[in-house]
Image 1 (cartoon, helix red, strand yellow):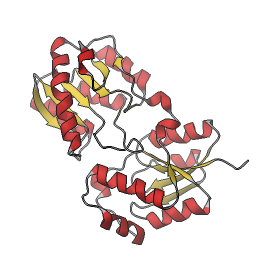
Image 2 (cartoon, rainbow, N blue to C red; image 1 turned 120 degrees about the vertical axis):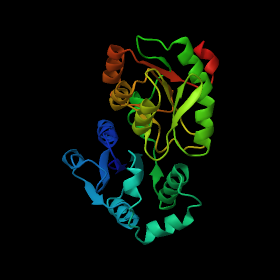
Image 3 (cartoon, rainbow, N blue to C red; image 1 turned 180 degrees about the vertical axis):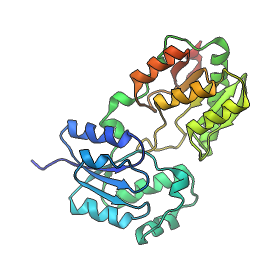
Amino acid sequence: MGINKIGIIAGEGEFPFLVAHGTSDVGYIPYVVAFKGHTRKEIGTICPNIIWVHVGQLGKIINFLKKNNVKQIVLAGALNKPKALNIRPDFKAAKLLFRLKAHSDNEILETIVKFFQEEGFEVVPPSKFIPSLTMPKGILTTKRPSKWEIEDIKYGFPIAKKIGELDIGQTIVVKQKMVVAVEAMEGTDATIQRAGTLVKDGFVVIKIFKPNQSPLVDQPSIGIKTIETMIEAGGSCLAVEADKSLFFQKKEAISLANKKGISIIGICEDLEELE
């Protein structure tokens, strides 16, 4: 029997660490590609098989994976978009960039996935190794969304899907059936913070899985930092698309939300179930 190997393309945050532990728990040996200026340095302490590269060094990445006979890879963790604009493409990366019709998230990520597949790798969804992170459906907190928050979710969810369809962002903030803020390059936390400067306490944050988005990469995610940001900004309800999103530090985040009177709910396309 051959040795199970998995390549982890490690972005920011704790996600790559969780994937590394998850793959190890089911018998895989992780081979990590870490990005200078993005990936946390501590990952080298748990994954000795590692290479550090600059964003855009695709040739170096491919050589590392093939040299170690890695057949499967998982993409774990996003890259800081503003910092990633300073890409230094090698020949392979330059060819990939030339293939892009646009520099939107979906276009870039789908092109990257296709690139790895063309190089002979199987791209595996991270949820295969950490299914416990999947956002569950239903109300997760002791505080239930109020009647007006339910109405704002029903109002905002299809709008968020339309914005996602345009590949702009995954998050919108709504209050009294008005869109307060829309996520773009800045990310969810900055969007919530901006909303807090525009309206008084009590608004709904809606985060969705973008239509046409690949489940192999960049799934929507929340965690305790999301709740901390909502507390600071004055948000009162967090609605996240269930089964297609990730929930980090779930226990701690729900506990904090309960203490601060914030409701968290996993939603799906059938919004009538919110009644």
